[in-house]
Image (cartoon, rainbow, N blue to C red; front, top):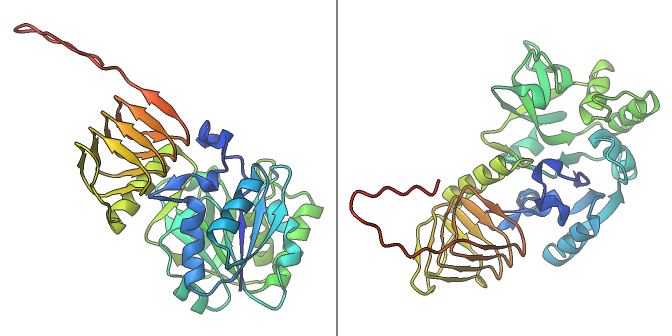
Length: 329
C-alpha cells in the first residue's frame, strides 16, 4: 500500500519559522511533524511513499533519506501553490488503479486507528467534530451513515464534522478521473484546487464514502496549535530524560535531546529541547526550543524558538527598600 503525503505548502501562518525550513519539519515533542505522520503508517505495513514537495523540498528529501532509509520514497514537485487537489493530480502516476491509497496531509497529527481504517471497506475519510468548521472541509452525512455532501471551507456550515486530512481511497481510478475533471473544468475554491471538490465529484457519480471519527486531531498550521500538540504528546508519552545538568531542575513531562546543554535553569513542564541547544540561567515552560538554539537569562512560556536562534535576556541586581513595588510588565 502507498501513502501520498503533500508537503509543498509554504506554511505562511508559521513564519518566521518556515522561512528556513518546511512546516512539516518543525519539531513537536522531540520529532518533526512529518515523523509523527510516517511512524504510524510504517507500523501498519505501509512501505511505499510519495511526497509532494515544493518550498524547501530538498530538506524534506534529506530528512527522509537519513531518518527513514528503509521506506521506498519518491518525490513529486509542485512549483506553485495551487492546492491539495492540484498536488495529487501531479502525483496521479503513483495512484495505482488496482490498489488502495492512503492520503495524509503533511501538517496533520491525529489519533487514528489505522488498523480500523484499513479494515473498513470502500472510501473512508477521517473526521472530527469541531465547534467552528468554517476553516476546514466539512462532511454532511445521510441517515444511512453515508456522506452526502462535501464542501470546503463553507461560509455557513450545515455540519460540524470536519475532515482532518486523512483519507483511505479504494476507488483510485475514479479519484484520478475526478482530479482530472476539476483541473480541466477549473473547479476551484478560494482560487485553489481542493481534494474535497474532487471527492464531491466522485459522490455525484454515485461513489459511496464513510467517515471514521478520531479522538484527537492537531492541524499544526499555527504556533498555538503546535504548542498545544507538543504539550499533549509530552503528557501522553512522558519521554524519559537524564537530569545530569548542572544546578538544574526538570519538571516533567519534557523532551530533552541527549546533546542539549543546560545549566542553572528550571525546565518544564511541557518543554521540548532540540539537539545541541544551549540553555543557561533560564526558566522555560510550555515551549519548543529548536536544535542549536542558545538561550541565556530567558524566562519563557508558550514560546516557539527556532533552529539556531539566540536569545539573551536581562539580568538585574536590585536593592529594593520597604513598601516598594516594581513591575517589569
